[in-house]
Amino acid sequence: MTSIIQTDFSKMPGHWVLAKMGKRVLRPGGIELTKKMLEHLHITEEDDVAEFAPGLGVTAKIVLEKKPKSYIAIEQNDDAAKQVIKYLPPKNATCIIGDAQYTKLPSQSVDVLYGEAMLTMQSTKQKEEIIEEANRILRKGGRYGIHELCLNPNHIDEKLKSTLRRDLANAIRVNAKPLTVFEWKSLFENKGFNVIIIEMRPMHLLEKKRMIQDEGLRGFATIVKNIAVNPDARKRIEDMHGTFKKYEKYLGAISMIMEKQ
Image 1 (cartoon, rainbow, N blue to C red):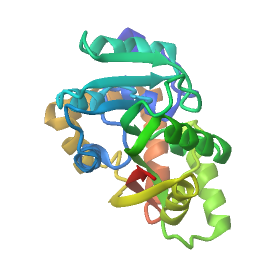
Image 2: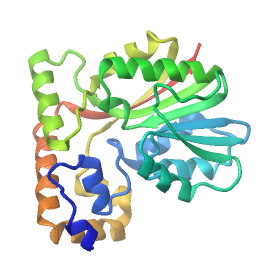
Image 3: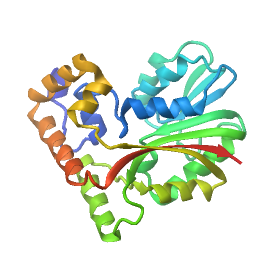
């Protein structure tokens, strides 16, 4: 508990604040949308699988239970990579430190690729570079799944979009740039992917019902207890929750499954 208290929560990215409080599922559509994404990816024991930015490994552990032919995590952060390595099995699974824009993986070496809550945090140029790299490393007919934040509706006012993004970035301390459904779809289609499935969910990351669904009652109780004894973290989380509620009508979660042409 001491390390939690001594942490500077005022500058920390929002997802790490939540992680310090014990939250494990840090995806906008919750564990249910993550599982739906994996269901649509149809991962089998014949697949070479890669994941961008596995984070705390909640999704990776589900994937590894499917016993894919191989699994590679691409993680940019050294400290996060050390955590990833801890939960990887000794055979056919590894973590490499690198950028999603330049994985160093061989071309056409992966059957299934996915990433969650990471493209939203990139600039337009970075989003395009990551998708180009995904296209390079995937085999023909390979599947690419994402689970990200999105904006509603497609014709959202540009001034509102700009204000929302600014307030969101201020709240979570990350320069988030979520897109509309149409913008997400166009982004992938322009880079040589066929979008075959789109799933949508409310962005209820910090709502009680979603948190219990994602973390279980015991996990939820632990998070509440940790927040109660850490006023700085509590203020950050209240600020984030307030921003999410303010723009609830316009924020959503999206999962898309693409196929390389």
